[in-house]
Length: 175
Image (cartoon, rainbow, N blue to C red; front, side):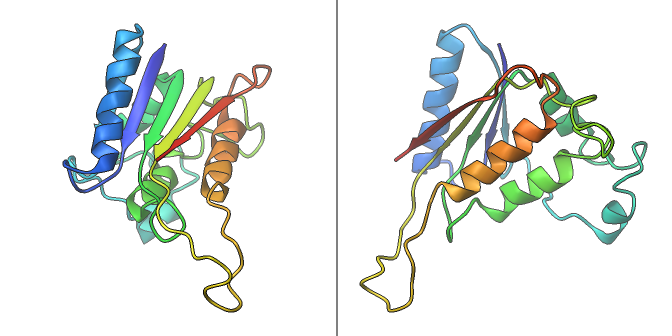
C-alpha cells in the first residue's frame, strides 16, 4: 500500500518524532511504500492567504504552492498523521496543511464528493495526548473529549474518499 505519513512537530528529539520513526519502520518492514513529509522540516506555509481563499474554487489556481502535497495525497492509499495534541487539538500547522491541501476539485467537489476524491482506505492518527483539565479542579470546566479533533479529521478524509463503497478504516494511537 502507498502510505503518506505527515509529521507535524518542530523538534526532532520529541516523542512525536520517535512515534514517526517507529511508524515508518513498521510500515516499511511490512512491505508498504511510505512517503514521509515533515511539515516543520520543510517549512510548510500553513497560512491560507486572502488570494488563495479567493481562488479556492478555481481548480487551475487553488493548488499553487502545494502541488506536491496534493499529488502525494491523491496517490496515497493510506494516510498517517503524526502530531501532538496542543491546546485540545492538532498543531496549527497541521490544520493549515488540511486547509491548503484538501482543495476543491482535487480532493472533493461540491456536486459529488466522491467523484474526484482520494483513494485512501486506511487512516491512522498517532500522537501524544497532552494534558486534560479535570472538572473538579476548575469550576465550570467540562470533561474534554480528546478524540474530537481526530473524529473531525476522519470525517474530512471519509467525505473526500472516492472509494465510497469501501469503508474507511480508522486507527487511533496515543501515548
